[in-house]
Length: 422
Image (cartoon, rainbow, N blue to C red):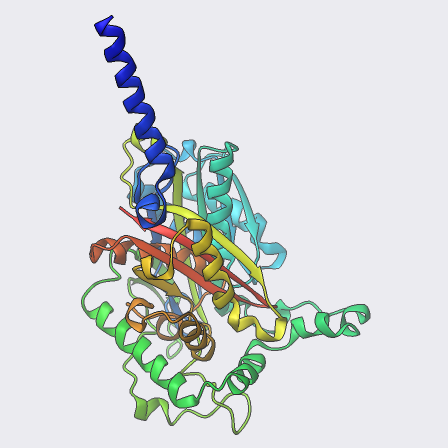
């Protein structure tokens, strides 16, 4: 009888612990570790280089992706045959890049049993790829997958990347707004929302300064996988083999120097090359699986994915996307904005990023502590996946826990995701 009483007591204790585990909310709730957590066991990116003149100007997008894939296999030690699906975010490649991305995976060492697909949700494509893989794991469709992103803006950026609208779309006001240049609509938004050039320039200079300091201190080194590539010297036309190991868009910028740059979208405009994201090349990849799988395979856990949000906004106000997406992601995670230690918000334009941060009342010191796309570039399909490694490594380095990645999305959308560092 004593044994039965003891066993009942143990069972009740376990049930109480499970109930407590299930009922934990807020910051404490998402910091708990559960066997079915979707975890990140490796996350990395290539350096990001200047479009048309940087270290990757002569490299095909699929070759960039191949480099990221090979580095991910090497760094994680994962058996490539255990990976079941790879999702790759991309914006500009013809046919979405589906054929060459599958080829890049095979060339990198993944067997033909590993499926690959390309997806395009504009500037959030890399994040969408990671979220799609996380959801596939959570649903039981796959056990292990990779979310990735890549863009060669050197080779594919320009008017040819946008399809001509039909007469039907051109004649529909809201639909026609989807093709308005993001620079033009961001300029109008800055005027309508009273974001001054001085404030934009100050935000941009801070991004450059943070990125410059981080680069000098080697704070990007953990997330970057250097690549050896063939590069043609524009001065001599000589082809050389070089190793690209740093973001080459980072430079010293002051309020005085940035103030001399002419507006890009009108004489009285406020947006220019110095306070908008750089045209760039780069790739990133994130390895995801359940915690129980990672433990069984002996994979080191860098962090975990919690939840994400995707929202629509008016096409002419695409820059406000993070303002709408971030609160929804926080609500889904059951936390407040104050629970978040670091926000990685893509700096498509200083105007929109600054406006979103101000409207959400996010302390400036929590936003992009190592700089952002203004300072080192925004390879469109890559950025969302790139932010994962930037965020998780910085959270770990600073002994912080909760992070949010977010971006505005062309044609009027916003996306955000919540991550936890371990």
